[in-house]
Length: 126
Image 1 (cartoon, rainbow, N blue to C red):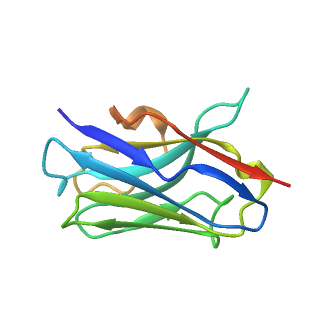
Image 2 (cartoon, rainbow, N blue to C red):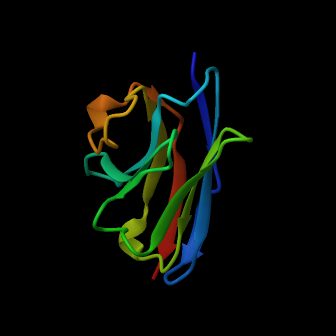
Image 3 (cartoon, helix red, strand yellow):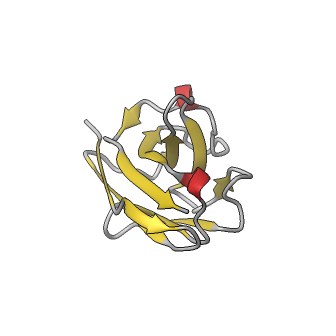
């Protein structure tokens, strides 16, 4: 069983930065893709960034590209999302997710991910 435990959310002013972490356990992740999604009130869950564990290949949503960096630490089985130049529209509950996609490209589709952590709230004040 895969367990994903996110941390690092909080309240930050516009223009500030946050780093989210997602500690993963339960299996090896060499054949997995891990990703961050977010969901704002009244909106659908949307892809933010993903990373293929085997080679650190990454994909970003246009909304965060250039402002965010996703990375992983294999020794700690932890994924990170460093977010900078935060905007009020980045306010959402952020979820980390995992999928056994093997060598497939990083997926941006919610339904491709079958392991989910609980959400962590990110609030950006204007």
